[in-house]
Structures are given as structure tokens and as C-alpha cells.
Amino acid sequence: MTAELPANSVTELLQRYSSGDRAISDALFREIWPVLHQLAVRQLAKERSVAPVSPTELISELWLRNLHRGGWNVNSREHFYAIVAMAMRRVLIDLARQRLAASRGSGYAPSGLEDGQEANIPSPVRLEEIIQIGQLMEILEKKDPPAALIADMHYFADYTLEEIAKTTGLSVRQVSYRWKKTEKWLKRQLGP
Image 1 (cartoon, rainbow, N blue to C red):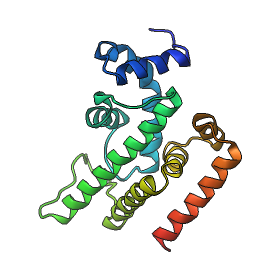
Image 2 (cartoon, rainbow, N blue to C red; image 1 turned 60 degrees about the vertical axis):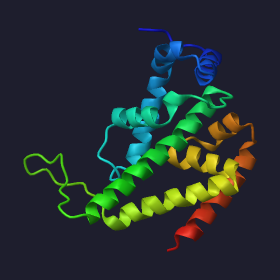
Image 3 (cartoon, rainbow, N blue to C red; image 1 turned 90 degrees about the horizontal axis):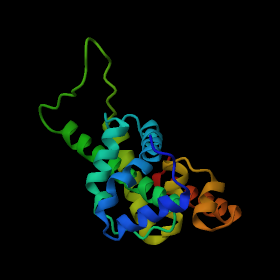
């Protein structure tokens, strides 16, 4: 078992990997795995009905779709985890789209049910709401990237406002203001 590296070492590994140093991928993945797993558990707890995947499956999908390519501009490990939270949200929204499409198709039969186990299948309305939130977040990313980052970190990754302030370099007051403004905008867009 390896000892946990200091934050600056993890940041250095992330920056090296992002710059193209693939030789350190195993060491990097070992170091970031616990936090990736924690973020995946949080994401899946919020959107339990979206996708019948485990945290490990979500991380694998995330790694295959986004992270293995590198090319991120990472300021710190906290910044990297904020990027991960956004990418996880996108993966879950894509999975919701796939489930909605499958539920509307002919012959859709949910899998994974054993011996009378109740199906935890989201309604098409719930899936459409998740997709709508995803579309709104994409609009917000174009319109106000810092606000989208704050929303991702606070709502989707359960970062506290203080943790977001530390990661972004904003004051807690600034983060709180932007979060409240963003939350109101999202609620207005979603309607009743």
C-alpha cells in the first residue's frame, strides 16, 4: 500500500499526465482513485435512478471517454476533481438519454432483476428532467463558465461553498452569491 502523496505531488502527476507523460498513468490512477470513487458515489446517490451502474463502472466510463486523453489545464488537484465532477455529470446525462431512448423503443426490457426484485426504473419524465438539467448546464457553461463550475462542484459533487472558494480562488461570499444566482436561474428555466 502506498502512502498518500502531498497535494503538490498529486498536482504534479496530473500536470505531467496532462502534458502527455503516459508512463505515470498507473501511479496517477492509484493516487486519484479514492477521490474519484467518492465523487462517483456522490453522483450516483443524487441520480440513483439514471443509470444502473456502480461507482467503478462510472469511473471506467469517465476514464475511457475523457480522462485518459489528458490535455487538461490543471491548477491543483481540487481543480482536477471539479473537472471530474463536470465530466461525470455529462456521462450520467448521456446514460439518461440512452435509457430514455431505449424506454421509448420497442421491446425494452430492463435487465438485472433477480427473484422478484423490484425494478428501480426512472419514469421517462424523470429522465427528461435530468436531460433538461444537463442541457441547461451546457448553456450555463457557455454563458458563465465560473457559475457552471460552481454549480457542478456544489450540486453534483457536494463540495461545500468553502471548498469551492478554496479551489477557485474566489471568496466564500462571491461563491455563495454566484451559487444563489445560478440556482435561481436553473429553477426559473426548469419551471414548476
